[in-house]
Length: 572
Ligand SMILES: *[C@@H]1O[C@H](CO)[C@@H](O)[C@H](O)[C@H]1NC(C)=O
Ligand SMILES: *[C@@H]1O[C@H](CO)[C@@H](O)[C@H](O)[C@H]1NC(C)=O
Ligand SMILES: *[C@@H]1O[C@H](CO)[C@@H](O)[C@H](O)[C@H]1NC(C)=O
Image (cartoon, rainbow, N blue to C red; front, side, top):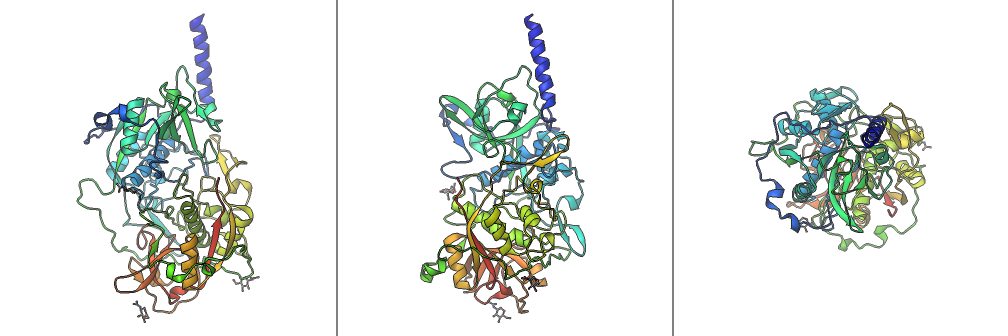
């Protein structure tokens, strides 16, 4: 009788598992060539009894080391959890190794899928991810955006640039990140030691229907025969009313669970979270090489040029409080300022590439969301979640003066749209470099295993309380110093396209404003040359790792004539 009941329960849970999301991870973590362990494992040198009762990389001594949240299921369903959980943990570990100094790196999950480094959108094995990155290295997402599709492992689908004339070409010189040691870990004590000493780990779980419905709190579910089918990243642990739990990052968007996270009861192997975990140790240089390969001049001349700004004076601003130049004294503004290093903290958000997977004149949406995302990070002192506002929603939804999307747009109209409507983060709508219609499904979506996509009803929208224009060196300095980065329009010359570093000085007198960037600081060289620090959206293989310096005070490239600012609303 008893065994019959058990059998009935068992088949019921098996049925349930089949009904839930289709498996995106193999049951076992396997390493084709075995684990790679050259350094002692943390549980062998840490005294487990000394580990704190609460610990999380989301808030360690007041610092957040976690990179932005992810959504594996947009723009279409893709069973890439095996690559998401692992690359997310590795990206976080890079921030930890660098003590949160610039740059924050988001590893290119799509390259892992394109090269079948463990699997595809039909599921895979996390062990393969570490082996792939150990052997081949992995670029950041400015080489390859996440597209939720099974691409091909060609040079162009590892690191690319696209231009209006030449189509897409492979980039030869770009920064790669590597993995040294990697292996498996299981059991609460060893998991804790690994997380505490080196950072988040990947873990296989049984993603049940109950977990899919989770909206918050400490989750618990144990099954007779758990079936590991999903990969997540465990970033810490805590205790509430005597119940110990893991803090886990999922890749189902911030609209799921607790801002994309869930907490799950520790010790009883709930959802089998304590049996199949994996870890890797990032290397910031290629293994067996003395130093990182330095970026050389591109063999091929790249063309980035766009007329991606179409400005119209008729777009209204909404200014409600006195602007900083009315209350800040110029002599109180420091000689140098850089959003990437304010008292040792990096408040810049991830770098972007507007031109992949195809050319798109979306600079007006990139420059504005980049400046605003940085302002949100600054306002929240880097606390989790670090938000990437969605430029794609602006590409889809902002229309002004008959121009919009990838044909170019108006930065003031971008801020005006956010003022009126708010804008979600990228886990609602990721960057696709194409113009879509502004329907609810293109503002915030989710997709299910049947291939159906639908609009998400409940999600966070980020608002601005006011926005306006600013021009002139002094007013720009006051605005940035008081409230953070601004979005500015510049004239792009071919010399600027080929820029590889240093303080740029245009000598052609170009003033035809056609490109949008963000200005996030300033400085003076030892030779006394004043410059702006700007962020472009042409990938980290361009310029100074995606950034540039431009001569200041002489309206070079027209940078001091047409800037926009926006003030983020408080986030609760
Ligand atoms: C629309 O843009 C064109 C050129 O981009 C400009 O000449 C025209 O004045 C603009 N219209 C309005 C209403 O601003
Ligand atoms: C890491 O950065 C924090 C904040 O800037 C600083 O207080 C701390 O000393 C740094 N730690 C190391 C090991 O550099
Ligand atoms: C920038 O270029 C202009 C025009 O050629 C030149 O007059 C100026 O001295 C240059 N500035 C610097 C700092 O090199």
